[in-house]
Structures are given as structure tokens and as C-alpha cells.
Image 1 (tube, helix red, strand yellow):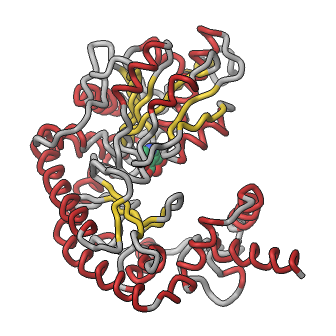
Image 2 (image 1 turned 180 degrees about the vertical axis):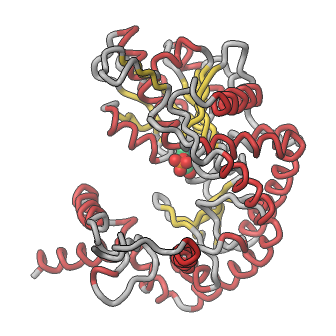
Image 3 (image 1 turned 90 degrees about the vertical axis):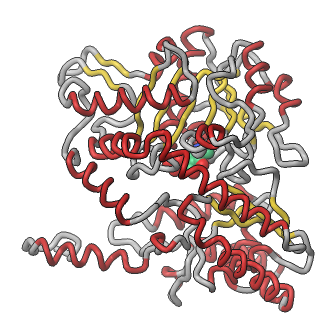
Length: 478
Ligand SMILES: Cc1ncc(COP(=O)(O)O)c(C=O)c1O
């Protein structure tokens, strides 16, 4: 056998050592250099979550009557979440494995609701262009056609176009609080009024904002109303494993009432394995994730989350002011926190080249497209490093301005090309082919965008897609 399954088992200490070694080249999020993916505070909190997780790591929430502890965690988490979002006495919901599961399930629920109550056979949903990609995935998975609500000149969902897009096949409308690319809260009140008028449910994707916006509001930050206080809002997704600072694998999906939630549930009465009922997408549900999420809510409480929100808000405002003070940069859209994105305000400064300079200084920043930009998911952990980040950003902008050829090098070249390639369908197929290949048993390690090796197979995926496109264009023009 290959080393992936050794012929003879190895000592636990030896295995654990190698396991840690595998993480050597992972992003070093503990020092706050990473601006996405991880919501980390400090070793003490990580240790606390680990202890809570470990206590229930074997427990299974599949059958809610078996592990009563898990059902109790879930009920209390849902109660806390529904109250935080001003749900009424009928509010209900489930804990899921993450934001994507919450989004997928909402689409399934509303597709089935419309099928059952209005006999809709060709379901459609209306989502702003800035909706998280999970909604695009849900559309594919559940056969619900996406109708994209365009953005206005401030990159806000253009609510003036919404009403004319609703038709009898519309099963749901989506708004985000806030949206992932630029951090603005969609106009939920206006969307809710239109949705209500047409009898179509409005879901709010608060996967990012669900556990920070309420505390920002308690701290006096002026925010639009986006939760169950808006009459048309019928459900909300909110991630515990983001600003709830729980362990990975925990989100919530709540509904205004049980009549809605019923359409999410799956019941089979005739399976030889017995009568089976499942509330969410997963079968086995990870007890550790529920326990750690419950523990996080108990540990922080309202005052703990308010403190985290206050520090995040401070970091966000310093970041925004610092970026706005650089004449060659502009903040994209009108972010309300806790994240923001920025692009170039100068033809001499390529924003992806600025990203390369920031990478070289040890920061890990995400790239955006349409428009090109750099992204920062800001947490309380970042407050102590914001000034260092801004200093490096100013230096990076100056370096790119002094040497515009940087735009054609490194990741800037790849990202610039990927963001502006025509023939998106062909690009999609090429990405699919290369991406799928990395899942071959014993296949090459996946490098989506990091530094690749010399061998073609070791090169970053986006670089290979770009190289494929250039070669194709050259062949055509030869
Ligand atoms: C607005 C929004 N919705 C949904 C998701 C999906 O969450 P997850 O990555 O936990 O599946 C994200 C992730 O960033 C998000 O920003």
C-alpha cells in the first residue's frame, strides 16, 4: 500500500507530529495577517473551543432523540439567534454545518413551498449580483433559475428593478446583510415591502452579519433594519463560525414560523432502516460543532459580543479612513462593516499588483473581480495590526506607481487576465477540468492561486487556465 494507508499502524505521537508538519505552510492566521477564511481571537479562546468540541466530538445529532444534549444545544442556539434577530414567538430553525448549507436549504424550502402551495413547476429566485456564490450553487443543485438583480452606481442592489422581475415562478427573493464582495447591507426594508406585496418570501443572508450587526447596533452604530422587524423577511441565515467565534462547522437557519420550516424537512416512512426524519442537509450531524457553538454564545454573552463588535468597528473605521486617504485608491461601494473592499482610483496603479506587493510583505488578501479589487474581512483580531497594514499598503501603492510593469507580472498578470477573459463558458470548462483533476486519488496537490512549482502540474490553477487561454489565442491567430 502507499503511505496514505500504511501497512502497519504508527504510534500516535508520531502521527500527530506529522499532522502538525502538514500545516507548516498553511496561512499563519494567529498573527492576524490573513483577512478571510478564519475568525480567530487568541490561543485561550481556541483552547476553550477545542475543549468544548472535544467533549462531544463523537456525538451525533442525526437522531435528535438520542443525544438529548445536542438537541438542547441546538434549541438554545436557535432561541438565542431568533431573539437576537427579533423573531416572534413562532420563530424556529436549525443549526447547520455552515453558511452554504443554510443558503442551500433556504432555496430548497422555498422551491418546495411554492410547489406545494402555488404549483410552481419552473422555480426562479431573484438575487442581487453580489449575493454569495452559495446562492449560485443552490440554484444549480436545486434547479431554481437565478434572476440577477443588477447593481446601481454605488454597487448597491438596485431595488427599483425588483418589482418588475417578480413573476408567478418567483419562489424567493434574497437580500444580504452584508453582502460578501463589498460589505454593504442590501435595502432589506424596501425589498421586504415589495416581496410582501407579491406574497414572495424574502430571505436575508446574514451569514457574515448575523452575529455582529446586532451588537454594532447595540453599541450605537446607525444601521438599516434588516432582520425579522422587516415584515417581508421570512428567514435568516447567520453563521456562528464567523463572527460568532465558534469552531468551524456551525451556522443557523431560522424561519419566521414552522409552516415555512416544514418544507425544509425530509421524512421517509417506508425505508427498511426505519421511519426516518431529518431536519437539514446532513445525515450525521457533528456534535462537537454544536457544543463549541453553544459554548461560544455562553462564554461571550451580549457584553462579550458587544466588545468584539466595538473593536471590529474601530478596526474597520481606521481601515476605511486609511484607504480613503490614499489618493490612488478608492473604497468600493458603501460598506457598513465589518468587511470592505478597495480598488484603484488611478490608471497608473494596478490593484492586483498592489495585492502582489502586499503578499510579498506577508499579508494574505483576497482578490475580487467586476470591479477589480482587494478584500478585507475585518475582525477584532486585526485592530492591533491595522496601522501596519496601512503603512504597507501605502508603500505597495508607491512601488506599483513607480513601476507600472508590475501589473504584467506575478499574480497580477494572472488575476488581471482571469477577470477580463471573454468566453466565460470555456474558462469554466477549463477550470473544471483542472480542478477536478486535483481530486484524483493520489493526484497533485491543489494550488489555486499560490506560488506553484516549475512542473506544469504543480502550477497554480488560475495560472494554468490563463496559460491555456493565451496558447489557445496564439493558435487561433497563427
Ligand atoms: C454572505 C455569505 N453567505 C454565505 C457564505 C457561505 O458561508 P460558508 O463559507 O460558511 O459556507 C458566506 C461566506 O463567506 C458569505 O459571506
